[in-house]
Amino acid sequence: MNTELFAHPVSFRHAPWAQAERLREAGVDRVRLAYAYHGGRWLLTTSEPAAVVDFAGGRWFTGRCRDGVRPSLELPVHGDHAATAAEALVASGVAVTGWLVALHQSAPATARPELAVRNAFGHSYRHALCPAQPDVVSYARDLVADTAAQPGVSALELEAFGYLGWQHASAHDKTGASLRPVDRWLLSLCFCSACSASLLEAGVDGAEVAARTRAAVLAQLYDPRPAAGGLAEDAAAALGPELHDMLLAVRAEVTIRLVRAAVEASGGLPVSVRATADPYACDGKSTGELSALAAAAGGLTVTDLGGDQAALRRDLLAASRTGTHVSAGWNLGAAQTRGEGELADVAHLARSHGASALVLYAYDLAPEPRLDWLRRLPRAAAGGNSSDPHSPPHRQTEPAR
Image 1 (cartoon, rainbow, N blue to C red):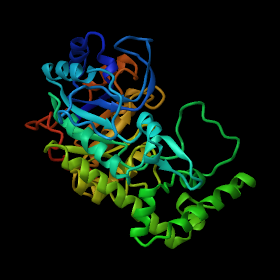
Image 2: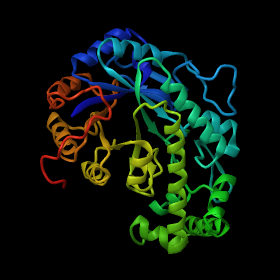
Image 3: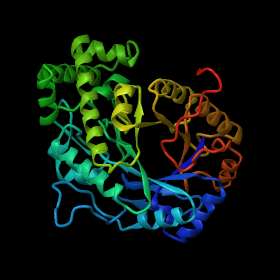
Image 4: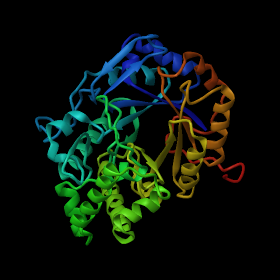
């Protein structure tokens, strides 16, 4: 099983060759490097310990495939740091996957609010582009094509290729209301012009869905009450079982179409999509039938960055049934991984469910000594190609649990 790391180009601003060598010496086979990423404020641990790096969302490379053609929707460009990092990594023998956080982008969603997720009350979300919008699909294709053409990129990781939700940890978000999981999901439903057209095409009364959504949320704001059951039960109760099921199917199909369009633009590179079997997820993971997502993308990355092994196990089990290439993602941070033994347990969990890579989040956020832990993880099977992102998954050594 390969050992891989998520990383941001800001970690390679100073002495990129030294950073690449540090990762090679730690036994890292591949880095999933952010070529497009949302805004952030990182407290670095390794490349420049204690540095606070505040950056806006956008692209971290300058190259473009199409000369003289200005797209209708594009990201701000923050220099060519990804290209510099990739050059150093490849020269050190560490393979590079282009990691794209596509629809979780505030600049284009703010500039073009008609292309953003629009809730049942008509309010646009400035952090979330809508995957049903044709201009957004074209933007995603262009972003994939541009990244696939970058030197050193040998695979692609697609994150936020689907619907984003209402919750967004930024701008000091505040609410005095007591929201249930179902209310947060209902506030994440999109009723923009493209989504309304998709619902209509599928025979779904979008106006009725929106009205029921508004009624449920307003009732909770007026008279807060605890969840009556699980999220699925409460969602079906709010919308009615038939509308609920049809809505989920339409949203899943929108996501599949977006992923297919992205893969068509990948230039034949191996693609893995960040995915989950949870149909209510709105956190940057593509949702829907994992078998359909696997067929569209060719590979799945299932992650739990909150430190919940049970949640990771559920998605790994579902992904293993698709028969496709699967990567398992985990957070190496101090709050999520409490010791080297826990990391070994996660690696065993991933391997036992057929994952061909354990991808850890993230270089320069986890304590530097934890790089030593990576050296002691089980290596790729003898004779395997550790840099091949779509090498055949290992046979399970024990029943999935």
